[in-house]
Image (cartoon, rainbow, N blue to C red):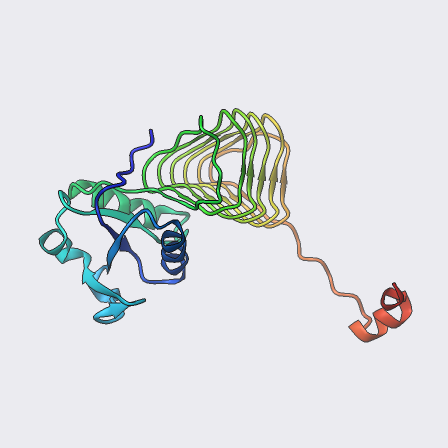
Length: 232
């Protein structure tokens, strides 16, 4: 399933914070030449962005044809990842090959497989015998255990923990420090919030959110004085 080309120059779709992070990882990797940035015409930031020329997606095939350039869609998880997925599909329909971006320090196992338009930001902890669908974004410090399967268009934030033999449906989102226990099946389009723990199979479209920690009545100065933490 590893479908990315390593030969054609690359155009990024997106000109926000996610695209900026992806661009820095690409520069660090040094194995793809990024030649331009595109977005829907109404969202173009000007003639240049991060030192690169910009082009409207509507004009992309004329200026950067798909037989000479690859594309990477660097958007966030808006609409439970559907916006990014829809732009990927639009690019494929125009004939573009969607590259995947792999941080040199991600260190994916040799037997891991993934589809197109995936982003892996290292360091990561991915066990052997793991498969990822297309358009999966996985951020530094996340864990995916052995024999797990991650569906298309998922977003795995830094510090998320997915144990072994887990099956994740498409379009799901895992926030920082969320945890899925061993052998659990997670439905499609699930939102698993920060610090949430999933120990049983979920249905599609479910939301799991943990309440924020309540603040103490003491001020930070009073707490330090009374707890004597500063004496350590």
